[in-house]
Length: 228
Image (cartoon, rainbow, N blue to C red; front, top):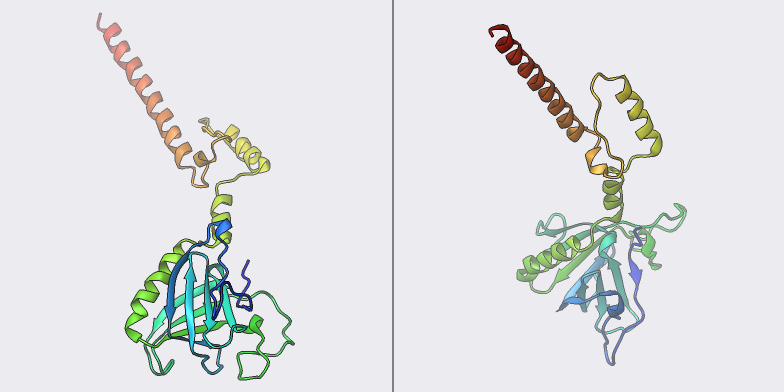
């Protein structure tokens, strides 16, 4: 489930501090990149700050205000891309689209330049490095971490595509009883029933070939007996 952008007020260490890494659950820091500005929606950029990327999420932490920072899980990032078009944004940056949780439409639209920042309404985030030559490297890290965080909804749908209910199996069994040739189907191995009936079709063809082979043997035996 998408959690959207989050406010970060807790940091580890002294001074400016660093993000709190959930090492107990396998989280690892992949990149620390200083000199990055952040742009949320249509608001003005915030800087200076440091970008932190782990194998699970992205942080931007202010270098001057320990209580100011933002984070977003990779599962909430639906799109990321390199943007160099000055018509889209004046500075080269990493552009991201963020999936947000369902919110009340009557809440203030925080994509505008309002004083109150409602993070649940932020759907776009830009990360602007001070050195544009680092964009390709940042994009590569984004891609790597995104691959480590596949959409669980898509994975669940993919798994469910291989699952058949008892009713479905019974219905297919009834159809098979009406057919001339029995169709192989093992409910303990759903890969044999993938909706296209590839395996069943192969067995069906094999049975036809077996029958034809038996018929050919009978004809050959009859010819021999007939000429004895």
